[in-house]
Length: 262
Image (cartoon, rainbow, N blue to C red; front, side, top):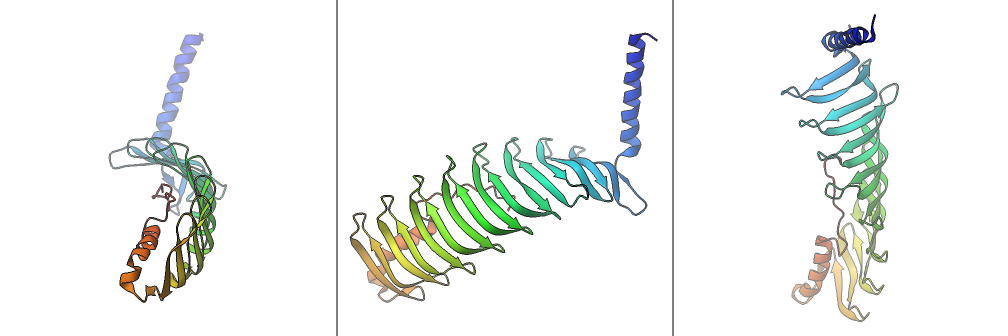
């Protein structure tokens, strides 16, 4: 048999094999109704939703998901039993949105989230336990310097909360307990001089609050009880400074969030 005829026969045989697989071996279930083997799920318009292999209803190996326009949505590498996977999730433009691990379909361990507008910009790293933030969460500036550090316990803020200027100097420091601000609250000018000092109790301002000028001299002093001052009119201007700080989360821009993977 000459090479040309052999090649044609080989191509026809391969095409027949592919056709047979497509027609009879994809999307099979066993007598118990469990997915087995090669599966391709599709959108109503026929485009591929996901493609991968299953064993006893669990995905094994590589599973790819697609957006309706057929750009890649995610690539997940599953363990032998299909209960753990390393995931890379993509934005529709192909840039990476997030990386992390799933255990029993829940986020576990360290996850990294990336910007949707600046490819490759690591927005933040978060620790997860059973799909809840649990451990240190760190946000970054575009140059990878740290913008914020805070710890979570079962998805509630717990412990020290710190924000930094882009220069690396500390901007804000306070403490969370049970998901509420509790304890000393401090804000600094970028030159290191205090700007605001005060206390929180269960998320309400309490006791003496002092606002400073940039040269270190005192600008205002306020006294709070359960989040309220005694002389509302006199303290209004001073309160606006603190209110604006809280509303805008200070001078530190909150790094962009990916949103859909929280």
